[in-house]
Length: 215
Image (cartoon, rainbow, N blue to C red):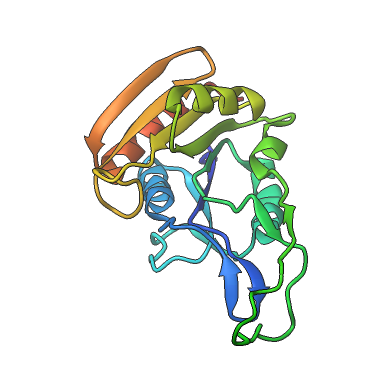
């Protein structure tokens, strides 16, 4: 019997302003890499599509390195065709500069930086939610109204479940430290997990995904 394919995205994306500057975020990729590692342990074939991180991919995954949101979308669309489980843990930039300057923008004394027009990136998660044939898990980081915003995202993107956490100083979501999450599923189930490592949470997330019967 062929092993099921799990597609995992991880890390940030980078949207270049000029050859040396870019728009990005604080994601380290730790959560996605732990999910990929756990999926391997459960016997899945794993494709890990990752933005720039300092992490070493788990041995045994098919590893695809990307940089921008457009790069990630291209890889994900190709690899999701045969996936049974899709975990969209990457922190994809919502916007990118309309164009990338060909040379480094030089600072000029007494003059402000020229304006940079941003355009919206494709909504990869929403695209995956259309006509899906896999279990689709999304992730959300919020600064307020965690449950409300996560539930709305679950509905808008047609997800099977969503893993949400709140940005807070006491237990930040970035890196390999302990964090809190809320999981909401498409059946209305909600459960919180407090102060757990991402390795432990990856096991919980795989348990949740395996609850969904995918043909």
